[in-house]
Length: 174
Image (cartoon, rainbow, N blue to C red; front, top):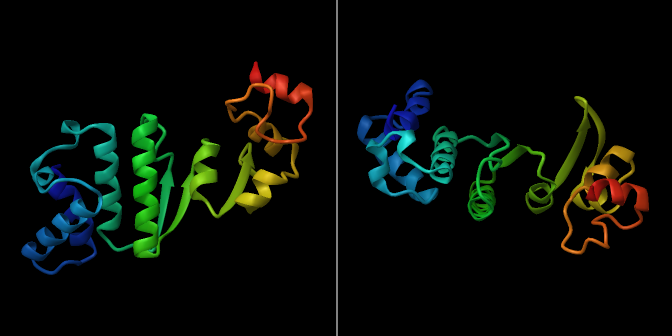
């Protein structure tokens, strides 16, 4: 499917956008909103970089005017600079459109940057939940403490999480 077909599929299914011309106009607006050029409409996904494909996927999700979007590891296959661009885009779209995200990730740096609330799961079970500040600054569960200690630090003598034991710090650095 071309990008045009990908973006209009949900609109057609949900009877949004009225005519083909209105859907086309909506597609162009979506591409602009995610930072893609209008020429992208007639191209195929394999013709784009990973970051561009992610922008198209975001435009596709937005095409049906959701208020809630599930994002499962949306930046995991991207290099750090592109991750940053995508996260900034998601944050801007969240503000502009009043979106709520369920953001699934193993990258705790992303969680700290983007999330308001955090749920920590271990083996498919919720072990801790709270605001980002509550969980990151004062984790209650040992599993959460181990996760936070494993976040790389620029200072190898100082663990990310204050108050952790030397044994956990050594394990995390190994």
